[in-house]
Image (cartoon, rainbow, N blue to C red; front, top):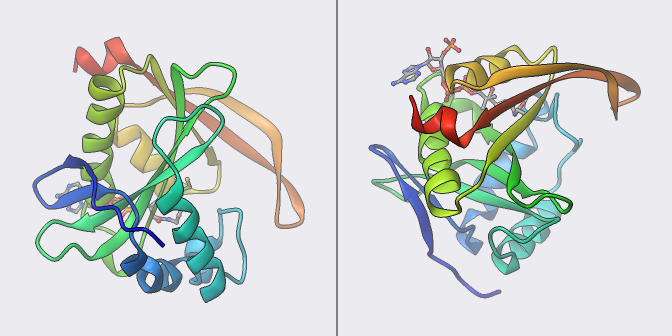
Length: 185
Ligand SMILES: CC(C)(COP(=O)(O)OP(=O)(O)OC[C@H]1O[C@@H](n2cnc3c(N)ncnc32)[C@H](O)[C@@H]1OP(=O)(O)O)[C@@H](O)C(=O)NCCC(=O)NCCS
């Protein structure tokens, strides 16, 4: 595995940086928690999955159409991984990106994802010069809905039975924020 220490954004308490091989155990700890997995695509997450994920992320470059890059969210003072923010550059329209996010349970309730997304949105709109950020959330994921609305994202749609999740069709909300909306805040 190669190492990458690239930092994409820094906030008061956090850095958003490239994933690194030192992150495997922390990633495994939160992804294997059933509460964290509840509204996510994975189940019964293994240590080997965490190793493969980190290896793939180390090799992944930002902003390649049709791919996701997971930005490691780490504490600024210790560089400890506490979560991740994902960015998907759409294949058909690379000026639009989709985001996702996860935070280790012991670090929730402190505004870390709100702060991380503040840094990430600045990077997406100012550095990558994107036109629009979109996000999808399971309608039952109350914490995620609060994250998106606290970030100033607008609910643009209620998508009925939009994806198959853990044995049933699931409704999603689609949220969005345009670059001019971000700049006028
Ligand atoms: C979605 C998720 C990231 C939200 O985590 P979170 O800790 O609630 O979000 P934040 O880090 O932004 O913290 C916000 C909370 O901290 C509180 N807070 C404390 N200090 C704060 C500060 N300085 N600034 C902002 N908020 C602060 C807020 O009041 C808020 O609590 P509330 O929602 O009860 O009002 C987390 O629940 C998670 O990882 N879930 C599993 C993965 C998932 O489902 N992801 C979404 C699908 S993409």
